[in-house]
Amino acid sequence: MTMKITTWNVNGIRAALGKGLATWIQTEKPDILCLQEIKAKPEQLSESQLNFPGYKVIWNPAERPGYSGVATFLREDQIEVNLGLGEARFDVEGRVIRSRHPGFLLYNIYFPNGQRGQDRVDYKLDFYSYLLGMCDQLHNDNENIILTGDFNTAHHPIDLRHPKENEKNSGFLPEEREWVDRFLDHEFVDIYRQLYPERVQYTWWTYISNARQRNVGWRIDYFLVSKNLAPRIKDVIIMDEVLGSDHCPVSLIIE
Image 1 (tube, rainbow, N blue to C red):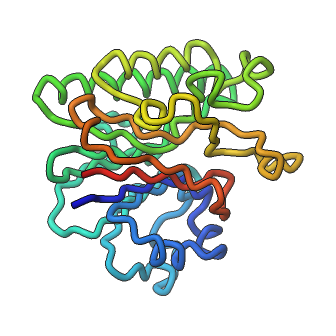
Image 2 (image 1 turned 30 degrees about the horizontal axis):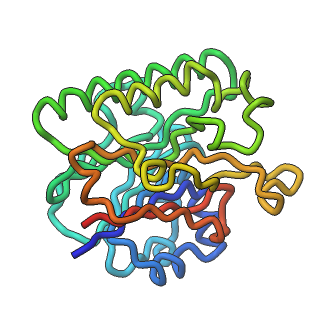
């Protein structure tokens, strides 16, 4: 029996619903759907917009209106769920939902974007560090973990169209990329890259200058899985044909 976990930064759930998100969910039928950058609180949605047949939705919006926020759609009932990391300066921005499933803990994460200045780069690196500390403890407790969402960092030159031109831009800074290395040094696997070491596919394209039509993109939406879980992963599918956001959905198939 397999389970499909899908992640998608929708860049505003209200906008995405206007572009057919609800229909797409019912067609695609992921067992778990992790949305990032929802930019809304559930009370800002109408009753019809909140109607997702077959799913229980866990919301963790940011305190600031129209900003950040994550939501996890679950088919199963009675799942243990935690909001945030337990650290106020990260949790006010609504960036994390953790849910427990048979055999693993799933983190739905919208990692900070460092493009507004050095203070946000520092905040982003602190977020990586704090999360890795939690994951180390969980691994010590023999937990298996899946981290998914918008990591806001391209790891290697293969993961973006113009690596040389972006070496000094947040999202491809050496210190950001090093944090992805650290997760991989701490019992995690970038499972897409393990399965497809040479494949060039992107998950985000700027809205500027027809980047998506020209496929000038970045791969910044990941599944990092505990090494012990890696043998159970059957596939990772980047659905770069799916429109509706500046990101595309990515699905993990786990046995």
